[in-house]
Length: 330
Image 1 (cartoon, rainbow, N blue to C red):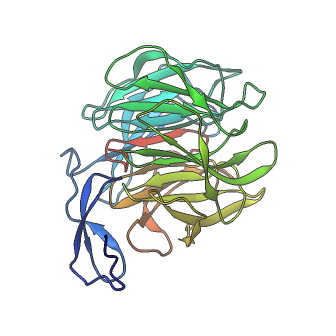
Image 2: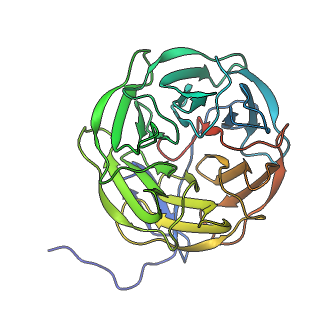
């Protein structure tokens, strides 16, 4: 017979089977005992790729997530890409897939090596040419879902990040949708909100290691498209978006337990179409639309509250892709 304590003592330790991490209870929440991120200039890197400023761009820029400051040039994508390509990464590689190479949508996937700045190279192709696609994944798999051809899509594709090649079918979302947010733990990928063609609050999830269709997780506090998703291994946030007006709202879910989102706090400005990245401590919202901005702000996953200023992008940029080598799926 298992025993469930009525009160958890401060300092209690547990093994979280969803995140594969040891955690300690600090009186109000569980915190990871230790985190590990690649030692690149002091920590994990967050990448912004493509978008518009206001013309479509192929530029990439990066920040070191653990230290606040302005972004630095990384290199160039293989083409000028906008209209919300999806992105994800392992601790080694970042992938950017789909979007629009003006004036047509694309199915191309580019990749970069996080540890070395430089231009992207061709990885392969998505199964469907589309924009407004999301990227999520873990250390092994990159997953791309949804989008518009311009018809709305429910496709889920995946690739093996360590090897180049075309994506293959994973399954289907519960509905055809584009312009979602995304987040992940090592086990689960989340699809947050989107456009169907109305703004929706639905949260869906997949089990990354197995192919199959997405299932319902819960709801955001407000239906919206183009939120920016970010996560630690246990918590995911949806930042900003359009409702249809632009929003500064930040929602929070616990990835291992299905259910509705709760309010986390507010961004420093009302923005959708922003790029995002994270490590196990911080989630970053980088740039965004509603009149493009270069502002970067950040939240601390373990403590709910409003975002604070982090620094600036090189350009005022929106509709691009964001990823990192230290996100919650690793």
